[in-house]
Image (cartoon, rainbow, N blue to C red; front, top):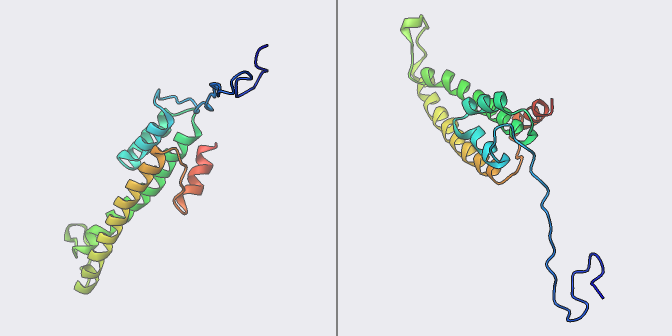
Length: 151
């Protein structure tokens, strides 16, 4: 007598039988990389790698989500830093801007530092989350990225 289909134990000795469980296949990627590796790479160079993966990836919603989130998050933070950094140094005479009072320029310096540190910490968190297969959403950017990825 053979073990009935689906039995996990031998009916004669009670020993456990090997059960073949196939994992749910990961969404195929147009890049040839696993989804988690590609998701992590979306953040590697900020919005630049995000753009690369938006262009390359056609199948995986997971990868497209992380690519869009990288573009939105790091694009916005880099634009903010691009505006704050020169202002924190004072006037820029060659573009004809009037000098800012010294106290405004000096107060923007710590803000630039805070935004830069937050950007770095967020970069690490997003790469770890994507590398572990999670679709962690940055508040504000995550919902928009999800909508773009599902188009």
